[in-house]
Length: 195
Image (cartoon, rainbow, N blue to C red; front, side, top):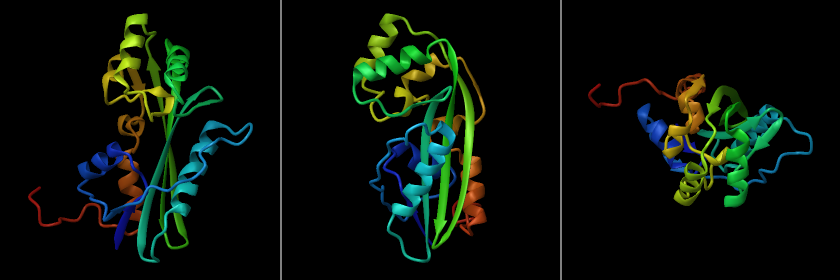
């Protein structure tokens, strides 16, 4: 059984490696990621993971793993910012408030699909002008939902989370391992390496 990771995210690849899982191929799908009018964050995130999994070209015996991470401030979806101005607006809006980070996972084998969403509550502190400008200058916000990555410099802005840290990074490993195992992928088998 070949495993195809439908994501260009180096973080997702690293999190899989932590499970001892190395994808046989990495084929990020190209889909429209715009939310539908009035679409709520959790259903949007689940739809993105599902559509990504459906868009990856795979053989009937290939297992496809896709994920989508969405930052939700109430009913508002904070996607990947288009520019530094939008990133600043996201970070200011998140400052001093709790928000949700939703990561949806989809695993597809032929016509079968297994799916799960993991929701983590996160609090970001209010950023000073110096912190905000320094973070924007770092470029770490680029390509990240909500304009931040908890595993980088922005970790210093997060005093509290409740839920899955790896889910906030982009792939909740416990839930991903369980879905892969359910689909028949040998996650926990010894592959000849020392434990």
